[in-house]
Image 1 (tube, helix red, strand yellow):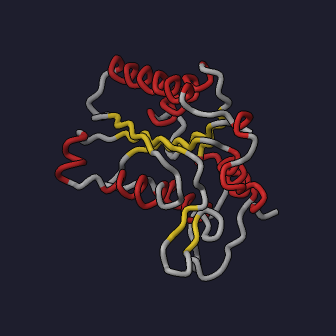
Image 2 (spheres, rainbow, N blue to C red):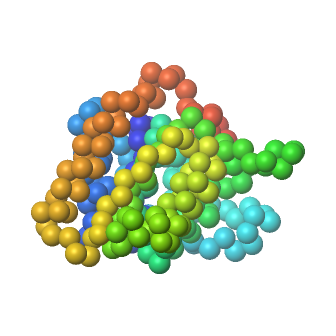
Length: 213
């Protein structure tokens, strides 16, 4: 089991997101944390939730393993690019299939949602070609709001830290190296304030026992 799970949501293994995922993992490991990196491009699964939440769609082995990794982690890190004001279809399909109702969240009798991934923190690292001020104040930050508020916090993860990287398309090699150094340093800092699984003596929310076999 790993203290931290990094979800690389970029389809391209040669992308900046993939490099940022590796650099952040290095920083965490430098401070003694165990890390799993889950590159969604390497998983075999159908990203389409064919009948919505009306009935259970059996999980492929890779998604069952992904649930296991999420259940075991203390912290979830998601690394993605901003495309068309949203997350890549690969990550959206992964969330649609993996964050199942009754496993990642549920609705209480009063109709209010309850996040079942409580007890975990998160970090979101987003890259973009547009400057941060444009995404926030002109577009209304749709990607971050959807991912942080409507997905991670909805499922109980908090706090959720945010790292913005960009603009990427005009960046130099020196700038990209500074970004890699930044997320590595953030990994070291995050590791120092993260309690270990061994110290807690239990999995957050007891999710491991709820996994389907």
